Length: 555
Image 1 (cartoon, rainbow, N blue to C red):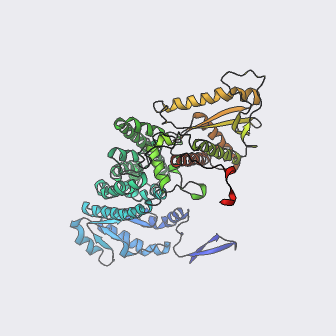
Image 2: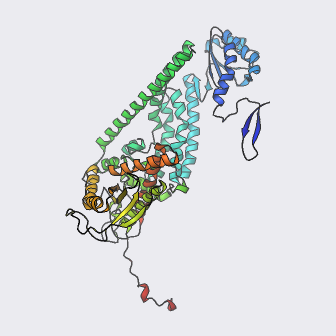
Image 3: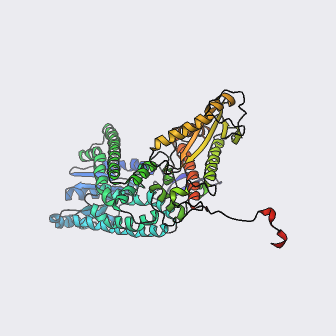
């Protein structure tokens, strides 16, 4: 047995024995194995036979007699290179008219000989009936697994959705990329996705138009729940297109480093073309959806497609980070995302108005609008503290402005306060004044206004009230932080997020994109959770006896 030195635990280096050569799971295993097996591949390079290898999976095509010579070389010389072939796991695939000849030539080998087809690297080659049967069996397995995920979604839809997006739907992606004309065979899978899985995520059965929306990428307002019937042809066509240069080299038996390098570079360029084509296709699908959608749905797609609005859907549902939503929270979040009806929010609010999701998010009763603001403010302040900005102060009272010549629009009250004040954001010692505002873009007074105008108006209102006072009295900088309840934010917010992400990534030596993603997710979940609380929070007027009038001896 050979071994490798590996260090683990507190005991220092140990030798791990392995009779299989390069241990599976090692990042270098594939490269190590490929290098080690090259001499055997060269030895088996004979005329009339084209051989193709993927790690330890050897494949060859050619005349039957040539294949027998190739097979004998592998059997004879393979063990010297650590390659021990199992004939019972080997398959010879020939045309039906050549079956007898193949059986005669490979009579004493134990190799399985067939003309119908064979499984190969997670796909199938052979006759149409064989390939159809193979795909149907795989789809049946995936349907059974998906039904298990459906059971999870009944109580934990957020976990089920994350598992589906990050792992489960990848199961059939490879097969679709390697097998043509199989899209109809995926219909049983789509039936379970649409009629069993999706209703548990969104709280209702969806229409054809809504199904198309949910298939869109998250960044475009969808949920990335693609229809596997529709993705099959795209995946196969793109796969053939991208791998074309490599396939050409294989067919030409061209192995020079220059040719391989050129082919790999061309593959990367073709992959980028496919990505751009996919974006164009999704944009076309979104345009078609918008042509069929009513004004309410168009508004929802616009809001959910804003930068940052969908970051909560892309986040892993980690409980330690506060990113996991329970059954009701997840479904409510999806209903808010698409303005779906809330069947259990009928009747009247405690304020006397008709209750619905839009009213619940603007009603002052219960103080949930203030709590939502404060929760987001505290989250943002915590991020600034983590960035190392000192000191970070909350609700700091502004200096008196008596004697200063401020515009009439300025807030000149002596008790005026600023949500967040810190130093080192824009420059090392300058004090940065940040003021948070959260508004609901679907409020009756806002519903007909473009979202860009709403951000602009709120930002201007804040600047008219505080900008001159902060600059002239406090001698600091002022940045309004305006958020929509749907998760979007004004351009000024994005500037602050970019700056904070840069500071954190530099200080903690983290990736800037990952840091930015985390900050967006943190602020998005803070806003989402407080919005969901406001949606379901009690808004009844409670009549109770003042505590000072209670005789505690008689309680």
